[in-house]
Amino acid sequence: MHNTPSLLFITDFYTELQHQNISYCILRKVNEVMQGNAHDIDMTVADNRLSDAEKILAKTANKLNWKLHLQIGNSKDKCNYKSYQYYQLNDYEQKIHIIHIDIIPTFTWQGYELLSNNAMLENIRPNGLFPIASASVEAFCKLFSRLLFNKYVKSEYKRDIQETFQKEGQTILSLLRNFLTPETAQYIYTLACDGLWDDIENERKLIIANIRKIAKRSKFMYYLHILRKAIKRKGLIIVFQGTDGSGKSTIIQGLTSVIGNSYSKSTIDYNHWRPKFLHLGKKCVDAGMKSSTDQPHASPPLGRLTSLAKMVFYTLDYLLGYVGRTYWQAARGHLIIFDRYYYDFYIDKLRYRLSINDAWIRFFQIFIPKPDITFLMVGDAQQIFERKKELPVAEVQRQIDAILKHQKLFTNPHIVDVSMPIPSVLYYVSREILSKLSTRN
Picture 1 (tube, rainbow, N blue to C red):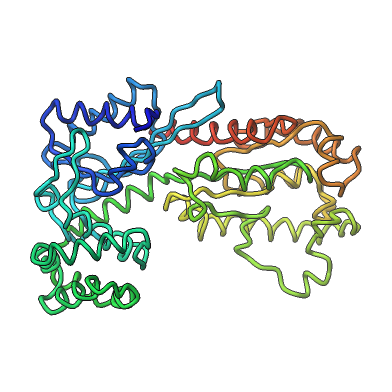
Picture 2 (cartoon, rainbow, N blue to C red):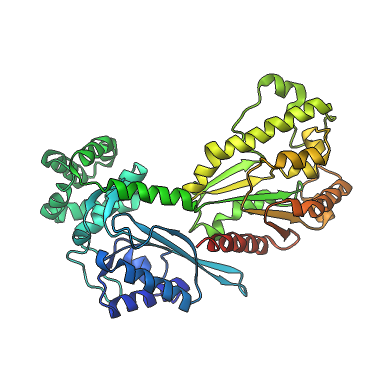
């Protein structure tokens, strides 16, 4: 057992749950939880004590100096899952600890109840502070959580699922018959016992058809849950604004090494400069509407009318891209990253071949969606030039000066000194992202 910050947090939380006689159990990976290696913990709590459990969790976090940065759901909703993500900073070591606790009172899929709260807490296996769900419930959750939500069965769970289905036949079949016809329940049970995972994944549509026909659904609470998620918009839109060679790509690629427990690669959406919701036609590209990234200043500026037309097009792209895609990515909890943004027009007009003054740029900015954070990547011009020799040192310095000059026009700007070591830059950026999230709760 490693006495990690996350383990101290969870043991303190579980100790108080037991002290107040609140029934709970861990749904998967109990060994990792006990060893202090788990950062994503799935558990269930007696639904009549959800409010008490939520208060204990908040009190524990406050006591141990953890900050809440993401939350989905609350104790008033006894049907859908609740997700709580906390972080703790260690400025001395420049480390960020993150713990993600999902409380699942009932196992539901799109509002359909597959396992009740009583079923999930039945036959708990005692294990000190770390009680484990019954073997059948654990195997059930491992199979259907991935199959229904992600369309596959996780490889590391397959052996345990198969062995448990073979040992707990009657119990498993009883659970399956809550939402499957007897014939389908027997069929899925047999496939799992035989380890025919491809066949199970191929029968996902059959399982869903059974669920919709047989299982009880809390439709109102489910749609209310989805609406709250969309309004809450637990994702963020962040911008990295800097010159060529300022390390934007390196920091973007390294973010998951620090905040991957909150934003994995699958929940990070990358955009270069603009959403590209609208696409330029081939004729426009041939006419020079597309700038070269390896020689950004190779082409001369366009005329004023053409430049104005480009600004209208780009403004529509940012606006429609936000309404049609970016907002909903954030509503789903994604981290949306822009490597450069609209603000780049203030910094380097020649890159976009614009012949337009700043007054027009400020006018069109009225319609541009505001990001949550703008990181301004600045530092020593010579050092930045050595990383990527695409622009002269003098031009790199000019752009750095322009970034600092115009920073008041950018939304929530944070100056990042890219002369620092990469781990230090990553720590600073990640800390600001989590801090911004925590202000919403």
